[in-house]
Length: 65
Image (tube, rainbow, N blue to C red; front, side, top):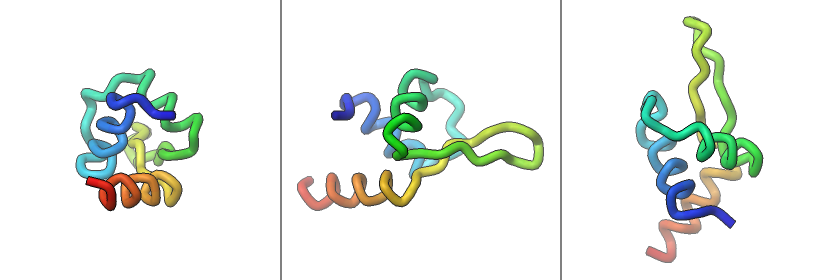
């Protein structure tokens, strides 16, 4: 189960993937549950992106809100 903070992080990653203010613990939890993956940019930096599984979870959340 995700904490409200992790759900908020997932939403931020979907809507603003270049957001750098995310806590590493939240990203690690989302990576562990395969809700996000890390995309390597040409600059060598990594950017989190929502996976298909993460997108499905966000869609399910949107249906109940």
